[in-house]
Length: 258
Ligand code: NAP
Image 1 (cartoon, rainbow, N blue to C red):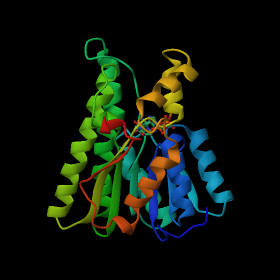
Image 2 (cartoon, rainbow, N blue to C red):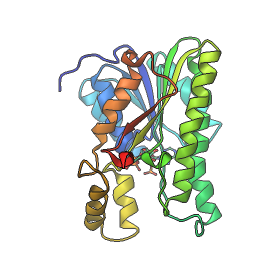
Image 3 (cartoon, rainbow, N blue to C red):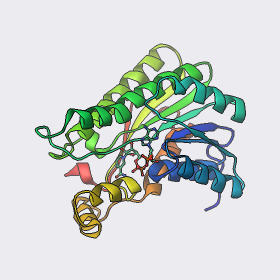
Image 4 (tube, rainbow, N blue to C red):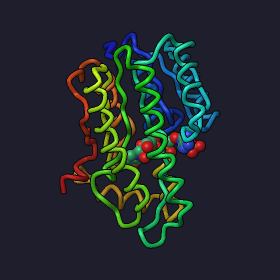
Protein backbone atom coordinates (compact mmCIF):
# COMPACT_ATOMS: atom_id res chain seq x y z
CA UNK A 1 0.00 0.00 0.00
CA UNK A 2 1.30 3.47 -0.88
CA UNK A 3 2.58 5.66 1.95
CA UNK A 4 0.92 8.94 2.81
CA UNK A 5 3.66 9.95 5.22
CA UNK A 6 1.19 10.02 8.10
CA UNK A 7 3.99 9.85 10.69
CA UNK A 8 6.81 11.31 8.58
CA UNK A 9 9.53 12.94 10.67
CA UNK A 10 8.64 11.02 13.82
CA UNK A 11 10.72 8.49 15.75
CA UNK A 12 8.83 5.58 17.32
CA UNK A 13 10.00 3.10 19.96
CA UNK A 14 7.96 -0.09 19.86
CA UNK A 15 8.37 -2.65 22.66
CA UNK A 16 7.58 -6.23 21.73
CA UNK A 17 8.31 -5.06 18.20
CA UNK A 18 9.70 -8.41 17.12
CA UNK A 19 6.39 -10.23 16.86
CA UNK A 20 2.65 -9.95 16.52
CA UNK A 21 1.06 -6.54 17.00
CA UNK A 22 4.39 -4.83 17.63
CA UNK A 23 5.89 -6.25 14.44
CA UNK A 24 2.91 -5.17 12.30
CA UNK A 25 3.01 -1.72 13.90
CA UNK A 26 6.74 -1.35 13.26
CA UNK A 27 6.26 -2.12 9.55
CA UNK A 28 3.22 0.13 9.17
CA UNK A 29 4.71 3.15 10.96
CA UNK A 30 7.90 2.72 8.92
CA UNK A 31 5.92 2.65 5.67
CA UNK A 32 4.20 5.84 6.83
CA UNK A 33 7.52 7.61 7.28
CA UNK A 34 8.59 7.10 10.91
CA UNK A 35 12.04 5.99 12.01
CA UNK A 36 11.61 2.86 14.12
CA UNK A 37 13.36 1.48 17.18
CA UNK A 38 12.28 -2.13 17.57
CA UNK A 39 12.77 -3.32 21.14
CA UNK A 40 12.20 -6.91 22.21
CA UNK A 41 13.33 -9.62 24.58
CA UNK A 42 13.69 -11.86 21.50
CA UNK A 43 16.83 -10.64 19.73
CA UNK A 44 16.44 -12.83 16.65
CA UNK A 45 12.85 -11.73 15.97
CA UNK A 46 13.54 -8.06 16.71
CA UNK A 47 16.65 -7.93 14.52
CA UNK A 48 14.73 -9.57 11.66
CA UNK A 49 11.99 -6.92 11.83
CA UNK A 50 14.50 -4.05 11.83
CA UNK A 51 16.39 -5.65 8.93
CA UNK A 52 13.20 -6.10 6.89
CA UNK A 53 12.25 -2.45 7.41
CA UNK A 54 15.72 -1.29 6.31
CA UNK A 55 15.61 -3.61 3.31
CA UNK A 56 12.26 -2.12 2.29
CA UNK A 57 13.79 1.38 2.30
CA UNK A 58 12.79 2.49 5.80
CA UNK A 59 15.03 3.26 8.78
CA UNK A 60 15.06 1.00 11.81
CA UNK A 61 17.31 -0.17 14.63
CA UNK A 62 16.94 -3.05 17.06
CA UNK A 63 17.53 -2.70 20.80
CA UNK A 64 17.40 -5.71 23.10
CA UNK A 65 15.26 -4.89 26.14
CA UNK A 66 13.49 -6.64 28.95
CA UNK A 67 10.74 -4.10 29.62
CA UNK A 68 10.49 -5.17 33.28
CA UNK A 69 14.08 -4.01 33.93
CA UNK A 70 13.82 -0.45 35.23
CA UNK A 71 17.51 0.27 34.67
CA UNK A 72 17.22 -0.46 30.93
CA UNK A 73 14.54 2.16 30.18
CA UNK A 74 16.70 5.33 30.35
CA UNK A 75 19.49 3.57 28.45
CA UNK A 76 17.14 2.38 25.70
CA UNK A 77 15.57 5.82 25.30
CA UNK A 78 18.99 7.49 25.24
CA UNK A 79 20.08 5.07 22.52
CA UNK A 80 16.95 5.79 20.45
CA UNK A 81 17.52 9.55 20.71
CA UNK A 82 21.20 9.24 19.85
CA UNK A 83 20.77 6.89 16.89
CA UNK A 84 17.48 8.14 15.45
CA UNK A 85 17.53 11.80 16.53
CA UNK A 86 14.59 12.00 18.96
CA UNK A 87 11.55 10.24 20.38
CA UNK A 88 7.94 11.13 19.54
CA UNK A 89 5.99 7.88 19.79
CA UNK A 90 6.19 5.07 22.35
CA UNK A 91 4.13 1.94 21.76
CA UNK A 92 4.10 -0.36 24.80
CA UNK A 93 3.19 -3.64 23.09
CA UNK A 94 5.34 -6.22 24.90
CA UNK A 95 3.08 -8.51 26.87
CA UNK A 96 2.40 -12.06 27.98
CA UNK A 97 -0.69 -14.17 28.65
CA UNK A 98 -1.00 -17.02 31.13
CA UNK A 99 -4.27 -18.86 31.67
CA UNK A 100 -5.54 -19.28 35.23
CA UNK A 101 -8.60 -18.50 37.33
CA UNK A 102 -8.85 -16.32 40.43
CA UNK A 103 -8.82 -19.53 42.48
CA UNK A 104 -5.96 -21.42 40.87
CA UNK A 105 -3.47 -18.87 39.49
CA UNK A 106 -0.12 -19.43 41.25
CA UNK A 107 1.41 -16.31 42.77
CA UNK A 108 4.44 -16.63 40.47
CA UNK A 109 2.22 -16.52 37.36
CA UNK A 110 0.27 -13.57 38.79
CA UNK A 111 3.46 -11.62 39.49
CA UNK A 112 4.94 -12.48 36.11
CA UNK A 113 1.88 -11.28 34.17
CA UNK A 114 1.49 -8.11 36.26
CA UNK A 115 5.20 -7.37 35.94
CA UNK A 116 5.34 -7.54 32.13
CA UNK A 117 1.85 -6.25 31.30
CA UNK A 118 1.39 -3.53 33.93
CA UNK A 119 4.61 -2.66 35.79
CA UNK A 120 6.51 -2.37 32.51
CA UNK A 121 3.82 -0.18 30.94
CA UNK A 122 4.10 2.11 33.98
CA UNK A 123 7.90 2.18 33.61
CA UNK A 124 7.73 2.87 29.87
CA UNK A 125 5.12 5.58 30.28
CA UNK A 126 7.07 7.25 33.08
CA UNK A 127 10.32 7.29 31.15
CA UNK A 128 8.49 8.15 27.92
CA UNK A 129 6.88 11.23 29.50
CA UNK A 130 10.24 12.40 30.82
CA UNK A 131 11.81 11.93 27.40
CA UNK A 132 9.05 13.66 25.43
CA UNK A 133 7.69 16.38 27.73
CA UNK A 134 9.81 19.14 26.22
CA UNK A 135 8.44 18.34 22.76
CA UNK A 136 5.38 16.60 21.36
CA UNK A 137 4.68 12.94 22.02
CA UNK A 138 2.20 10.10 21.88
CA UNK A 139 2.28 7.12 24.22
CA UNK A 140 0.15 4.16 23.15
CA UNK A 141 -0.37 1.42 25.71
CA UNK A 142 -1.68 -1.87 24.40
CA UNK A 143 -4.36 -3.08 26.80
CA UNK A 144 -7.00 -5.53 25.55
CA UNK A 145 -10.69 -6.24 25.26
CA UNK A 146 -9.72 -8.22 28.36
CA UNK A 147 -9.09 -4.86 30.05
CA UNK A 148 -12.79 -4.05 29.59
CA UNK A 149 -14.52 -7.38 30.16
CA UNK A 150 -13.36 -10.49 32.02
CA UNK A 151 -12.71 -14.17 31.33
CA UNK A 152 -12.87 -16.66 34.20
CA UNK A 153 -9.60 -18.23 33.06
CA UNK A 154 -7.58 -15.02 32.59
CA UNK A 155 -7.55 -13.58 36.11
CA UNK A 156 -4.03 -12.12 36.10
CA UNK A 157 -4.29 -10.97 32.48
CA UNK A 158 -7.62 -9.22 33.19
CA UNK A 159 -6.10 -7.51 36.23
CA UNK A 160 -3.07 -6.33 34.25
CA UNK A 161 -5.01 -5.02 31.25
CA UNK A 162 -7.66 -3.31 33.39
CA UNK A 163 -4.77 -1.64 35.18
CA UNK A 164 -3.26 -0.43 31.90
CA UNK A 165 -6.59 1.19 30.96
CA UNK A 166 -6.91 3.42 34.03
CA UNK A 167 -3.19 3.99 34.46
CA UNK A 168 -3.11 5.39 30.90
CA UNK A 169 -5.95 7.78 31.73
CA UNK A 170 -4.15 8.94 34.88
CA UNK A 171 -0.98 9.56 32.86
CA UNK A 172 -2.98 11.48 30.23
CA UNK A 173 -4.50 13.72 32.91
CA UNK A 174 -1.09 14.32 34.46
CA UNK A 175 0.40 15.35 31.12
CA UNK A 176 -2.51 17.67 30.35
CA UNK A 177 -2.41 19.30 33.79
CA UNK A 178 1.35 19.71 33.54
CA UNK A 179 1.11 21.47 30.20
CA UNK A 180 3.00 18.72 28.42
CA UNK A 181 2.15 18.06 24.78
CA UNK A 182 2.29 14.33 25.45
CA UNK A 183 -0.86 12.30 24.79
CA UNK A 184 -1.48 8.91 26.42
CA UNK A 185 -4.08 6.45 25.17
CA UNK A 186 -4.87 2.76 25.52
CA UNK A 187 -5.78 0.31 22.74
CA UNK A 188 -8.12 -2.63 23.34
CA UNK A 189 -7.85 -5.38 20.74
CA UNK A 190 -10.09 -8.42 20.62
CA UNK A 191 -8.36 -11.70 19.83
CA UNK A 192 -5.75 -11.15 17.11
CA UNK A 193 -3.95 -14.04 15.42
CA UNK A 194 -0.38 -13.68 16.70
CA UNK A 195 2.25 -16.00 18.23
CA UNK A 196 0.83 -15.09 21.67
CA UNK A 197 -2.60 -16.46 20.84
CA UNK A 198 -1.51 -19.53 18.86
CA UNK A 199 1.05 -20.30 21.57
CA UNK A 200 -1.48 -19.94 24.39
CA UNK A 201 -4.00 -22.15 22.56
CA UNK A 202 -1.32 -24.80 22.09
CA UNK A 203 -0.94 -25.05 25.87
CA UNK A 204 -4.60 -26.01 26.35
CA UNK A 205 -5.49 -28.11 23.29
CA UNK A 206 -5.82 -28.21 19.50
CA UNK A 207 -4.84 -24.88 17.93
CA UNK A 208 -7.21 -25.08 14.92
CA UNK A 209 -10.16 -25.98 17.11
CA UNK A 210 -9.17 -23.20 19.49
CA UNK A 211 -9.10 -20.70 16.65
CA UNK A 212 -12.63 -21.67 15.58
CA UNK A 213 -13.84 -21.20 19.14
CA UNK A 214 -12.25 -17.75 19.23
CA UNK A 215 -13.67 -16.83 15.79
CA UNK A 216 -17.17 -17.52 17.13
CA UNK A 217 -16.67 -15.20 20.11
CA UNK A 218 -16.42 -12.17 17.79
CA UNK A 219 -19.69 -10.86 16.29
CA UNK A 220 -17.76 -10.04 13.10
CA UNK A 221 -17.15 -13.79 12.75
CA UNK A 222 -13.38 -14.14 13.00
CA UNK A 223 -10.31 -13.20 15.05
CA UNK A 224 -8.44 -10.12 13.87
CA UNK A 225 -5.11 -9.80 12.12
CA UNK A 226 -2.21 -7.67 13.44
CA UNK A 227 -2.73 -4.89 10.90
CA UNK A 228 -6.29 -4.35 12.15
CA UNK A 229 -4.70 -3.04 15.34
CA UNK A 230 -1.66 -1.45 13.72
CA UNK A 231 -3.90 0.94 11.75
CA UNK A 232 -5.46 2.14 15.01
CA UNK A 233 -2.02 2.63 16.53
CA UNK A 234 -0.96 4.56 13.42
CA UNK A 235 -3.87 6.96 13.97
CA UNK A 236 -2.90 7.50 17.63
CA UNK A 237 0.76 7.97 16.67
CA UNK A 238 -0.04 10.55 14.01
CA UNK A 239 -1.03 14.18 14.46
CA UNK A 240 -4.48 13.28 13.10
CA UNK A 241 -5.30 12.31 16.70
CA UNK A 242 -3.92 15.52 18.26
CA UNK A 243 -7.15 16.04 20.28
CA UNK A 244 -7.23 12.44 21.52
CA UNK A 245 -5.83 11.70 24.97
CA UNK A 246 -7.00 9.58 27.89
CA UNK A 247 -9.13 7.60 25.48
CA UNK A 248 -9.54 3.86 24.90
CA UNK A 249 -9.55 2.70 21.31
CA UNK A 250 -11.48 -0.57 21.02
CA UNK A 251 -10.58 -2.73 17.99
CA UNK A 252 -12.32 -6.00 18.75
CA UNK A 253 -14.66 -7.22 16.00
CA UNK A 254 -17.57 -6.42 18.31
CA UNK A 255 -16.34 -8.62 21.19
CA UNK A 256 -17.21 -6.09 23.91
CA UNK A 257 -20.45 -4.93 22.24
CA UNK A 258 -22.19 -8.10 23.45
P1 NAP B 1 3.37 -11.74 20.86
O1 NAP B 1 3.05 -12.20 19.50
O2 NAP B 1 3.70 -12.76 21.90
O3 NAP B 1 4.53 -10.64 20.80
C1 NAP B 1 4.95 -10.03 21.99
C2 NAP B 1 6.43 -9.79 21.95
O4 NAP B 1 6.79 -9.21 23.22
C3 NAP B 1 7.25 -11.08 21.80
O5 NAP B 1 8.31 -10.90 20.90
C4 NAP B 1 7.78 -11.31 23.22
O6 NAP B 1 9.01 -11.99 23.24
C5 NAP B 1 7.95 -9.89 23.70
N1 NAP B 1 8.07 -9.82 25.16
C6 NAP B 1 7.49 -10.61 26.09
N2 NAP B 1 7.91 -10.28 27.30
C7 NAP B 1 8.81 -9.27 27.15
C8 NAP B 1 9.61 -8.53 28.05
N3 NAP B 1 9.61 -8.76 29.37
N4 NAP B 1 10.40 -7.55 27.55
C9 NAP B 1 10.43 -7.30 26.21
N5 NAP B 1 9.71 -8.01 25.32
C10 NAP B 1 8.91 -8.98 25.79
O7 NAP B 1 2.12 -10.92 21.46
P2 NAP B 1 1.01 -10.04 20.68
O8 NAP B 1 -0.17 -10.89 20.49
O9 NAP B 1 1.61 -9.29 19.58
O10 NAP B 1 0.63 -9.03 21.86
C11 NAP B 1 1.15 -7.71 21.91
C12 NAP B 1 0.37 -6.94 22.96
O11 NAP B 1 -1.01 -6.92 22.60
C13 NAP B 1 0.43 -7.57 24.35
O12 NAP B 1 0.49 -6.57 25.32
C14 NAP B 1 -0.88 -8.34 24.43
O13 NAP B 1 -1.29 -8.53 25.75
C15 NAP B 1 -1.79 -7.40 23.66
N6 NAP B 1 -2.98 -8.02 23.11
C16 NAP B 1 -2.88 -9.07 22.26
C17 NAP B 1 -4.04 -9.62 21.77
C18 NAP B 1 -4.03 -10.80 20.85
O14 NAP B 1 -5.09 -11.42 20.70
N7 NAP B 1 -2.91 -11.13 20.23
C19 NAP B 1 -5.28 -9.11 22.14
C20 NAP B 1 -5.33 -8.03 22.99
C21 NAP B 1 -4.18 -7.48 23.48
P3 NAP B 1 8.99 -13.58 23.58
O15 NAP B 1 8.14 -14.21 22.51
O16 NAP B 1 10.42 -13.96 23.53
O17 NAP B 1 8.37 -13.70 24.93
